[in-house]
Image (tube, rainbow, N blue to C red; front, side):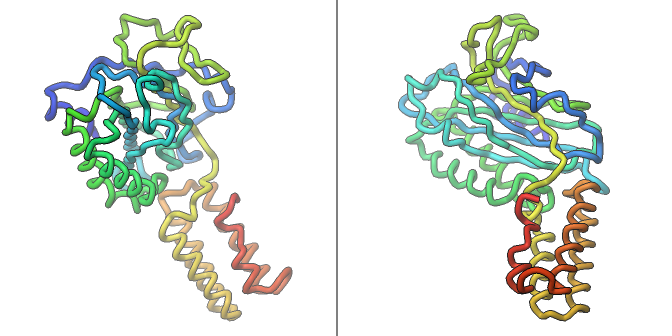
Amino acid sequence: MGYLNTLFTRLKGAPPTDCLLVRNVPDPTGKIADLPMRPDEVYIELFVETVRLKTQRRCAGRLHGMLYGGLTLARDGGRNAALATITKPHHLTELDTKTLHRAIMVERRLLGAVPWHGGTLKLELGLFSIKAASPLSPVLDYVTRVSDQAGISFVGGAQRFLPLITDALNLILGQSRDVAIELTLDTDLTLSRSEVMALVAVSKDRITPADLRIDPTDHKLLWKGAPLEDGYCVISIRRTDRKADFGEIPELAEGYNHLRDALKTRRKRVSEEAKQALALAIYRSPDLIDRDKARLVALIEAEVKRAITGTGADTATTFGDLPLYADQ
Protein backbone atom coordinates (compact mmCIF):
# COMPACT_ATOMS: atom_id res chain seq x y z
CA MET A 1 0.00 0.00 0.00
CA GLY A 2 2.72 2.49 0.95
CA TYR A 3 0.00 4.58 2.54
CA LEU A 4 1.79 5.95 5.58
CA ASN A 5 4.73 7.48 3.76
CA THR A 6 2.39 9.04 1.21
CA LEU A 7 0.27 10.50 3.99
CA PHE A 8 3.18 11.96 5.93
CA THR A 9 4.67 13.46 2.80
CA ARG A 10 1.37 15.22 2.14
CA LEU A 11 0.77 16.34 5.73
CA LYS A 12 4.24 17.12 6.97
CA GLY A 13 6.69 16.88 4.10
CA ALA A 14 8.49 13.90 5.68
CA PRO A 15 7.87 10.99 8.04
CA PRO A 16 8.13 11.68 11.79
CA THR A 17 11.23 11.21 13.93
CA ASP A 18 13.60 8.35 13.17
CA CYS A 19 12.40 4.88 14.09
CA LEU A 20 14.68 1.89 14.26
CA LEU A 21 13.38 -1.55 13.32
CA VAL A 22 15.25 -4.32 15.09
CA ARG A 23 14.58 -7.77 13.69
CA ASN A 24 15.03 -11.14 15.35
CA VAL A 25 14.78 -9.93 18.93
CA PRO A 26 15.22 -13.00 21.16
CA ASP A 27 11.86 -14.58 21.98
CA PRO A 28 11.54 -14.95 25.77
CA THR A 29 8.68 -17.44 25.45
CA GLY A 30 10.42 -19.79 23.05
CA LYS A 31 7.07 -20.37 21.33
CA ILE A 32 6.78 -17.58 18.74
CA ALA A 33 10.02 -17.10 16.86
CA ASP A 34 12.22 -19.30 14.65
CA LEU A 35 9.46 -21.50 13.23
CA PRO A 36 9.83 -22.20 9.49
CA MET A 37 7.64 -20.09 7.20
CA ARG A 38 7.41 -22.40 4.21
CA PRO A 39 5.44 -20.86 1.32
CA ASP A 40 1.99 -22.37 0.71
CA GLU A 41 2.19 -24.43 3.91
CA VAL A 42 1.40 -21.95 6.69
CA TYR A 43 -0.61 -18.84 7.55
CA ILE A 44 0.97 -15.70 8.93
CA GLU A 45 -0.38 -13.45 11.67
CA LEU A 46 0.71 -10.00 12.83
CA PHE A 47 0.63 -9.45 16.61
CA VAL A 48 1.42 -6.41 18.73
CA GLU A 49 3.05 -7.63 21.93
CA THR A 50 4.04 -4.59 24.00
CA VAL A 51 3.95 -0.82 23.53
CA ARG A 52 5.38 2.17 25.35
CA LEU A 53 4.08 5.62 24.49
CA LYS A 54 6.28 8.66 24.73
CA THR A 55 4.85 11.56 22.80
CA GLN A 56 7.24 14.31 21.84
CA ARG A 57 4.47 16.87 22.21
CA ARG A 58 2.11 16.27 25.10
CA CYS A 59 -1.63 16.31 24.53
CA ALA A 60 -3.37 17.77 27.56
CA GLY A 61 -5.64 15.44 29.51
CA ARG A 62 -6.24 11.77 28.88
CA LEU A 63 -5.10 9.91 25.78
CA HIS A 64 -6.10 6.92 23.70
CA GLY A 65 -3.54 4.80 21.93
CA MET A 66 -4.41 3.88 18.35
CA LEU A 67 -2.78 1.16 16.27
CA TYR A 68 -2.82 0.94 12.50
CA GLY A 69 -1.63 -2.20 10.77
CA GLY A 70 -1.34 -3.01 7.09
CA LEU A 71 -0.05 -6.01 5.14
CA THR A 72 0.44 -6.50 1.42
CA LEU A 73 1.46 -9.97 0.30
CA ALA A 74 1.20 -12.44 -2.56
CA ARG A 75 -2.20 -13.99 -3.17
CA ASP A 76 -2.82 -17.35 -4.78
CA GLY A 77 -3.88 -16.94 -8.38
CA GLY A 78 -4.38 -13.18 -8.30
CA ARG A 79 -3.01 -9.75 -7.58
CA ASN A 80 -1.25 -9.01 -4.30
CA ALA A 81 -3.61 -8.92 -1.34
CA ALA A 82 -3.86 -5.88 0.93
CA LEU A 83 -5.31 -5.89 4.44
CA ALA A 84 -5.53 -3.05 6.93
CA THR A 85 -7.02 -2.40 10.33
CA ILE A 86 -7.34 0.37 12.89
CA THR A 87 -7.83 -0.58 16.51
CA LYS A 88 -7.92 0.97 19.97
CA PRO A 89 -6.96 -1.77 22.45
CA HIS A 90 -8.61 -1.30 25.82
CA HIS A 91 -5.15 -1.45 27.42
CA LEU A 92 -4.38 1.85 25.67
CA THR A 93 -7.49 3.84 26.58
CA GLU A 94 -7.79 6.69 29.03
CA LEU A 95 -4.05 6.99 29.67
CA ASP A 96 -2.84 9.96 31.69
CA THR A 97 0.49 11.43 32.74
CA LYS A 98 0.86 8.78 35.44
CA THR A 99 0.36 5.85 33.09
CA LEU A 100 1.57 7.19 29.76
CA HIS A 101 5.17 6.05 30.16
CA ARG A 102 4.39 2.53 31.31
CA ALA A 103 5.19 -0.35 29.02
CA ILE A 104 1.84 -2.04 28.39
CA MET A 105 1.58 -5.67 27.33
CA VAL A 106 -1.07 -5.74 24.63
CA GLU A 107 -0.59 -9.13 22.93
CA ARG A 108 -3.25 -8.38 20.34
CA ARG A 109 -3.59 -9.86 16.90
CA LEU A 110 -3.74 -7.09 14.34
CA LEU A 111 -3.91 -9.08 11.11
CA GLY A 112 -4.11 -12.72 10.09
CA ALA A 113 -4.25 -15.60 9.60
CA VAL A 114 -3.60 -15.21 5.88
CA PRO A 115 -1.90 -17.75 3.60
CA TRP A 116 1.81 -17.21 3.13
CA HIS A 117 2.93 -17.73 -0.47
CA GLY A 118 6.43 -16.36 -0.08
CA GLY A 119 7.94 -13.35 -1.82
CA THR A 120 7.97 -9.89 -0.30
CA LEU A 121 5.82 -8.86 2.63
CA LYS A 122 5.02 -5.14 2.83
CA LEU A 123 4.42 -4.17 6.42
CA GLU A 124 2.92 -0.90 7.66
CA LEU A 125 2.53 -0.10 11.32
CA GLY A 126 1.50 3.08 13.08
CA LEU A 127 1.18 3.88 16.77
CA PHE A 128 -0.53 7.16 17.65
CA SER A 129 -1.77 9.04 20.71
CA ILE A 130 -5.16 10.73 20.40
CA LYS A 131 -6.68 13.19 22.85
CA ALA A 132 -9.53 11.33 24.55
CA ALA A 133 -11.98 14.25 24.69
CA SER A 134 -11.43 15.34 21.08
CA PRO A 135 -14.04 15.13 18.29
CA LEU A 136 -11.94 12.31 16.84
CA SER A 137 -12.95 9.85 19.55
CA PRO A 138 -16.30 8.88 17.91
CA VAL A 139 -14.55 8.53 14.54
CA LEU A 140 -11.96 6.23 16.05
CA ASP A 141 -14.62 4.15 17.79
CA TYR A 142 -16.63 3.81 14.58
CA VAL A 143 -13.69 2.80 12.37
CA THR A 144 -12.50 0.34 15.01
CA ARG A 145 -15.91 -1.36 14.91
CA VAL A 146 -15.85 -1.42 11.11
CA SER A 147 -12.37 -2.95 11.11
CA ASP A 148 -13.50 -5.69 13.47
CA GLN A 149 -16.64 -6.45 11.48
CA ALA A 150 -14.85 -6.36 8.13
CA GLY A 151 -12.69 -9.28 9.12
CA ILE A 152 -8.94 -9.02 9.31
CA SER A 153 -7.99 -12.52 8.29
CA PHE A 154 -9.64 -13.08 4.93
CA VAL A 155 -8.90 -10.95 1.91
CA GLY A 156 -12.01 -11.05 -0.23
CA GLY A 157 -14.42 -9.41 2.18
CA ALA A 158 -11.89 -6.93 3.48
CA GLN A 159 -11.12 -5.19 0.19
CA ARG A 160 -14.21 -3.00 0.14
CA PHE A 161 -13.40 -1.65 3.59
CA LEU A 162 -9.86 -0.52 2.74
CA PRO A 163 -10.92 2.91 1.41
CA LEU A 164 -12.91 3.60 4.59
CA ILE A 165 -10.00 2.63 6.83
CA THR A 166 -7.45 4.69 4.91
CA ASP A 167 -9.80 7.68 4.66
CA ALA A 168 -10.39 7.51 8.40
CA LEU A 169 -6.64 7.39 9.05
CA ASN A 170 -6.24 10.40 6.79
CA LEU A 171 -8.91 12.28 8.75
CA ILE A 172 -7.51 11.34 12.16
CA LEU A 173 -3.91 12.20 11.41
CA GLY A 174 -4.95 15.44 9.75
CA GLN A 175 -6.08 16.79 13.15
CA SER A 176 -2.56 17.62 14.34
CA ARG A 177 -3.76 19.44 17.49
CA ASP A 178 -5.30 16.29 18.94
CA VAL A 179 -2.97 13.60 17.56
CA ALA A 180 0.66 12.78 18.32
CA ILE A 181 2.66 10.41 16.16
CA GLU A 182 4.52 7.87 18.26
CA LEU A 183 5.96 5.35 15.81
CA THR A 184 5.53 4.48 12.15
CA LEU A 185 6.94 1.78 9.92
CA ASP A 186 6.63 1.22 6.20
CA THR A 187 8.98 -1.49 4.97
CA ASP A 188 9.38 -4.56 2.78
CA LEU A 189 10.40 -7.82 4.43
CA THR A 190 11.52 -11.23 3.31
CA LEU A 191 10.65 -14.02 5.72
CA SER A 192 11.92 -17.53 6.16
CA ARG A 193 11.00 -17.98 9.83
CA SER A 194 8.61 -16.42 12.31
CA GLU A 195 10.18 -13.67 14.37
CA VAL A 196 9.84 -11.02 17.04
CA MET A 197 10.71 -7.42 16.11
CA ALA A 198 10.98 -4.12 17.92
CA LEU A 199 10.19 -0.72 16.47
CA VAL A 200 11.97 1.86 18.61
CA ALA A 201 11.71 5.67 18.50
CA VAL A 202 15.47 6.22 18.43
CA SER A 203 18.07 6.62 15.72
CA LYS A 204 20.35 3.67 15.04
CA ASP A 205 23.40 5.46 16.44
CA ARG A 206 21.84 5.74 19.93
CA ILE A 207 21.47 2.09 20.81
CA THR A 208 23.06 -1.20 19.83
CA PRO A 209 20.34 -3.55 18.54
CA ALA A 210 22.24 -6.61 19.74
CA ASP A 211 21.76 -5.42 23.33
CA LEU A 212 17.95 -5.42 23.12
CA ARG A 213 16.06 -8.09 25.02
CA ILE A 214 12.48 -8.69 26.15
CA ASP A 215 11.82 -9.14 29.85
CA PRO A 216 10.27 -12.62 30.21
CA THR A 217 8.07 -11.52 33.12
CA ASP A 218 6.33 -8.39 31.85
CA HIS A 219 7.58 -8.23 28.23
CA LYS A 220 9.18 -4.81 28.65
CA LEU A 221 11.89 -4.01 26.15
CA LEU A 222 15.30 -3.94 27.82
CA TRP A 223 18.51 -2.37 26.61
CA LYS A 224 21.64 -3.61 28.31
CA GLY A 225 19.45 -5.16 30.99
CA ALA A 226 17.53 -1.98 31.94
CA PRO A 227 14.04 -0.91 30.75
CA LEU A 228 14.23 1.18 27.60
CA GLU A 229 13.01 4.71 28.31
CA ASP A 230 12.08 5.59 24.73
CA GLY A 231 8.84 4.84 22.97
CA TYR A 232 8.63 1.45 21.31
CA CYS A 233 6.37 -1.21 19.93
CA VAL A 234 7.24 -4.91 20.04
CA ILE A 235 5.56 -6.93 17.31
CA SER A 236 5.68 -10.52 16.12
CA ILE A 237 5.02 -12.14 12.79
CA ARG A 238 3.81 -15.59 13.70
CA ARG A 239 2.97 -18.72 11.77
CA THR A 240 0.07 -21.04 12.30
CA ASP A 241 -0.92 -24.26 10.55
CA ARG A 242 -4.67 -23.84 10.90
CA LYS A 243 -7.14 -21.07 10.29
CA ALA A 244 -9.40 -21.26 13.33
CA ASP A 245 -11.80 -18.56 12.07
CA PHE A 246 -12.45 -20.02 8.61
CA GLY A 247 -16.16 -19.84 9.37
CA GLU A 248 -15.94 -16.08 8.92
CA ILE A 249 -15.15 -16.47 5.20
CA PRO A 250 -18.47 -15.44 3.57
CA GLU A 251 -18.65 -18.07 0.82
CA LEU A 252 -17.89 -20.86 3.29
CA ALA A 253 -20.46 -19.62 5.78
CA GLU A 254 -23.05 -19.46 3.00
CA GLY A 255 -22.16 -22.96 1.80
CA TYR A 256 -22.35 -24.36 5.31
CA ASN A 257 -25.79 -22.87 5.91
CA HIS A 258 -26.99 -24.28 2.58
CA LEU A 259 -25.67 -27.72 3.50
CA ARG A 260 -27.32 -27.60 6.89
CA ASP A 261 -30.66 -26.73 5.29
CA ALA A 262 -30.21 -29.53 2.74
CA LEU A 263 -29.57 -32.10 5.45
CA LYS A 264 -32.74 -31.11 7.22
CA THR A 265 -34.69 -32.27 4.15
CA ARG A 266 -33.27 -35.79 4.69
CA ARG A 267 -32.94 -36.13 0.91
CA LYS A 268 -29.63 -37.76 0.03
CA ARG A 269 -29.26 -36.25 -3.46
CA VAL A 270 -29.95 -32.71 -2.24
CA SER A 271 -27.54 -33.17 0.65
CA GLU A 272 -24.80 -34.58 -1.59
CA GLU A 273 -25.12 -31.66 -4.02
CA ALA A 274 -24.87 -29.16 -1.18
CA LYS A 275 -21.86 -31.03 0.22
CA GLN A 276 -20.10 -30.95 -3.14
CA ALA A 277 -20.83 -27.23 -3.52
CA LEU A 278 -19.33 -26.50 -0.11
CA ALA A 279 -16.29 -28.67 -0.84
CA LEU A 280 -15.78 -26.82 -4.13
CA ALA A 281 -15.99 -23.47 -2.32
CA ILE A 282 -13.37 -24.67 0.13
CA TYR A 283 -10.99 -25.84 -2.59
CA ARG A 284 -11.41 -22.59 -4.50
CA SER A 285 -10.88 -20.34 -1.50
CA PRO A 286 -7.66 -18.29 -1.73
CA ASP A 287 -7.91 -17.68 2.01
CA LEU A 288 -7.01 -21.28 2.89
CA ILE A 289 -3.84 -23.31 2.46
CA ASP A 290 -4.07 -26.73 0.79
CA ARG A 291 -3.57 -28.70 3.99
CA ASP A 292 -6.46 -26.88 5.65
CA LYS A 293 -8.66 -27.39 2.59
CA ALA A 294 -8.14 -31.14 2.70
CA ARG A 295 -8.76 -31.22 6.44
CA LEU A 296 -12.02 -29.30 6.22
CA VAL A 297 -13.36 -31.33 3.30
CA ALA A 298 -12.58 -34.55 5.17
CA LEU A 299 -14.40 -33.20 8.22
CA ILE A 300 -17.46 -32.37 6.12
CA GLU A 301 -17.43 -35.81 4.50
CA ALA A 302 -17.38 -37.53 7.89
CA GLU A 303 -20.12 -35.39 9.40
CA VAL A 304 -22.41 -35.65 6.37
CA LYS A 305 -21.98 -39.42 6.29
CA ARG A 306 -22.92 -39.59 9.94
CA ALA A 307 -25.94 -37.35 9.39
CA ILE A 308 -27.23 -39.25 6.34
CA THR A 309 -26.75 -42.73 7.77
CA GLY A 310 -28.37 -41.70 11.02
CA THR A 311 -25.55 -42.87 13.25
CA GLY A 312 -25.39 -40.95 16.47
CA ALA A 313 -28.11 -38.51 17.55
CA ASP A 314 -30.99 -37.10 15.49
CA THR A 315 -29.81 -35.64 12.18
CA ALA A 316 -31.46 -32.25 12.54
CA THR A 317 -29.90 -31.56 15.92
CA THR A 318 -26.59 -33.34 15.31
CA PHE A 319 -25.69 -31.32 12.25
CA GLY A 320 -26.86 -28.16 13.91
CA ASP A 321 -24.12 -28.79 16.47
CA LEU A 322 -21.56 -29.69 13.82
CA PRO A 323 -18.12 -28.64 15.07
CA LEU A 324 -17.24 -27.33 11.63
CA TYR A 325 -17.01 -23.77 12.84
CA ALA A 326 -15.66 -24.55 16.27
CA ASP A 327 -12.06 -25.20 17.27
CA GLN A 328 -11.25 -27.83 14.65
